[in-house]
Length: 628
Image 1 (tube, rainbow, N blue to C red):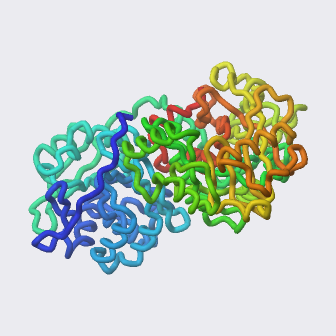
Image 2 (image 1 turned 120 degrees about the vertical axis):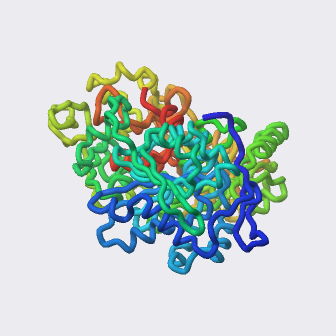
Image 3 (image 1 turned 90 degrees about the horizontal axis):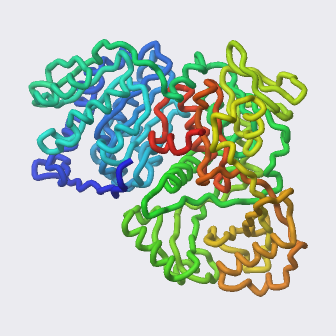
């Protein structure tokens, strides 16, 4: 991706003529009195809809210029009203100037046509924070998805991965916003086109039609709408199919019809995230894990899920942001105890100099204040409800998660079955792969296998003759760590939000505050220890300025706690994606200490590819986490 560029908010208002206008571009968003008619005439009928989607399992639309979302609402409305609709409908829409949630809700209440009013609240309720990148929204129990790409089209279009059946080209007028009609952008969008893709736009300028022809479309002028003489419609020109060498496309093809059972090796955070994402899309899943119903996180009372920020908005920061948003959306409807608690996170730096640097980073990134903001010591203490050593930044979306409850809830998704066994090797067979136990017993067979068994994936790849092509995976190592449970009654009931920095301290769960965590290189076992508890108490004291009087008498070695392993790769990014040298085999491993951040995101990433959906991550992040 190009260098980070903050999002520019829209400057929208009603003009003297009563039309809803962009002050940035001096153009109308749409005709106020005929928005639905325009969407139906130009974009739906211009793309042959709803007729073209009938008889299909899925249909994908790509839009330039989301605006207030009226085209999406019209498309969704048409899908709802068509008895012969496709099973799944996807829209991928680019928007450089997204509205804030409250503004979007308010404008749509005023401007949405009556026929679409029933959908407005659903869209506004799910509307994401105005953060750069891709945001996945789901409606109709996941049958309708909206993938919002926030940023400039020139930067984002080359990064998108989808198979597009229809294009809605709906930016501001070419003479007002020429960047959205450039030949290079048309070529980038055309790269996503399915063989029979169509397009439609209200624009009919000659240079726009020529750019579309040069991008590989056969275009024609036809009758316009709302006072416009003409509009443009088109269809992808016949062309020979290119050789498929993209690992994601090969893996999708290896999955066959996309209906067979998927084998997932590993039943922890990684495997449970993949299993749930696939099962929610109607796939049958078999999870193979030696622990059986007893997760490796049994006894792990609570953990924190907090985004990362970095001045250059590097891949780790962008992935953590996307992972946090996906976890909230994917896990929010789980049963009480398993669903995350959005309590917020206070991130405290070690000293005043680092705090100042963090504040400067936020000024440069210009993230919305309702997502992250700086707080001084007094405000931090008020948010936490306890005295703190210093101020820092507050993430409103900080989540407290109970892994021991979350993982079983994910694995209880209908369509997921479990086998309590240790996978030892993979064996290629004519129609896919077999997962074998140590004695050669076949534990499962399928066209697609996902290795989500943390550090165990390395040994499994080695035993299967697949590790030599993955030098980074060969460097994966296991790192032990532990958390300690501190009694909430010893400290005024504990903090009201997550307090993080050099270590972390969580709000109480069942009367205990979790403090963590340790990092033990070269450990032979992961165990609760007096040394580890002393380290966790020291970190808690650093966040608070000193240990509360009620905790001063706690004896390291006599506290409850939990210990486990992290699978760590060079660079501390996970390995997620298909194996190019073993079509049908996927990796979801190396989550390090960010298992909660990656679980829902990577599950949806793998499931989206297998089910032919637009991918919820841009290409450069796919490359950053690709198994290698």
